Image (tube, rainbow, N blue to C red; front, side):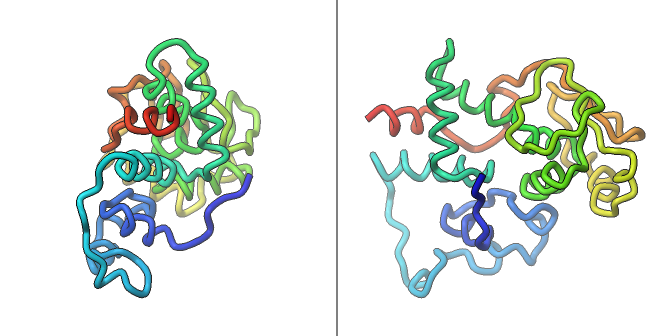
Length: 210
C-alpha cells in the first residue's frame, strides 16, 4: 500500500494544528508549527487565513483524519464505504475501524512514539498478534487479541524508550498494557469516546454523501 513520504511537519502546518505525527518532537520547541506557524510553500508566509465554510470545512476535516492515521485517499475512501455498510452511525464506525488498525493499536499501547513509527515496526516484523507475526499495518484487531513485541525486539532502543514514556501519554480504556512483558490485550472494541482526537466525523460523512 502506498504511503506519504513527504515532510509530515508540512501536514500539520497545512491544517494549522498539531497532528502529533512526529512523536516526541511534537512536544518540544523544535516542533515546526511552533517555529513556523504559517502555511507551507513559497508563498505560505504571506497567505492569509480566511474563514473556511461549507465544502472547504468538510474537506479539511477529511484531510485531517487521513493525515492523523497516515492514509492516502483510496484506502481512506475504502474505510468509509465499509463504515457506511455497517449498522450504527457511519462517522463513529469510521473512527472505530481506523482505531482498530494494528499500527494504531501498537501506537496506542505505547510501543511506538508515533503512528508512522508503529507502521514501520509492524512492517518490519517486530509485532506479533496472538504469538503469530503480523506485518500488515491495516490488520484489524478484535476483542481478546494479544498484541506483543517479538522477543528479539524487546531491546530495540526506540521501543524501550517509547514504553518508558507511555505513562505521560496514557493507554486508552479499550486496551490493557503489560509494560514489563512488552505486550497488551484488546479488552473490548473502541467506542467514540475512546478516540480523543479533535475531529468532527459528521463533516466527513457529509462530504462523501454529496
